[in-house]
Each structure stands twice: as C-alpha cells, then as structure tokens.
Amino acid sequence: MATPYTYKLSHDQNGRIIEKTETVNGKPMNWTYAYDKKGRLYEARLDNRLICQCQYDRQGRRQQDYFPRTHGSQMRNYSYRMDNRLQQAGNNGYTHDEQGFAPSGILAATIRFMNTPRIIGY
Image 1: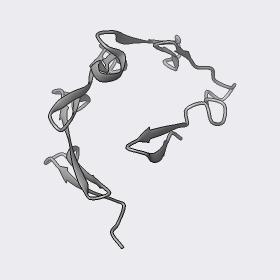
Image 2: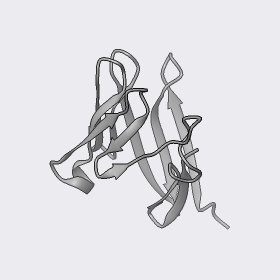
Image 3: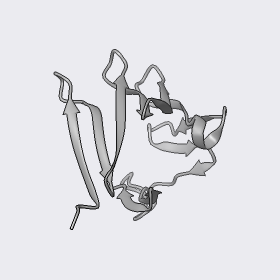
C-alpha cells in the first residue's frame, strides 16, 4: 500500500526551510519559501505560483499579508495592542486573558488542503 502523504524539507545555511516537497497520493507539490534580510518569511510559492507575501513593521511584527489565490488583490492588515499582543488580523479579532494568553483554541484552526486535514496552532 502506498503512503498517502510524505514530505521532504530543504534548509538554508541558517536552518530556515527554503523548500518543501509534499507528495499526496503520489502527486508531488513543491513549496518554496523566501525570507527578507532579517530572516522573516517574505514569500511562499506553490509550484511557482505566489501563495503569500508578508510585510513587517519596524518592530518586526507582521503588518500586512497578501494571499492572491484566496483573497484576490486584498491585503490583510494586522493591528496590535499597546502591549504588543495581536488584536486584529484582517476581519479576525483576538482577545487575551490576564496572563496574556489567547483563550484555549482561539489560535487553532483546521486547514483542508487536497483533502488532507492539518491542524495548526498552539
């Protein structure tokens, strides 16, 4: 029986992932990642198609991102509270408890890609 999902990672000299090849049911998909001069994710591509571009403010926080395949030409803006905690990402608002943590599950999401569920979050 064939393995339904495999992946292979390539890293740069700083340990960052620069390429990921995922194989789902025998079909390979090639992700490439580019970073800015400060080592932050700048761009992600899937089979050479732009998936995401990210911009950061002077404090190193994500300021905007752009997902042309799923959100068209719209940029998603981020805003932060005075204590540097994420307050808003596009249309999504975030809250934090007294210790500064997001309530359980608020940062977790299920993503479906090629009918393969993946859980991301904390």
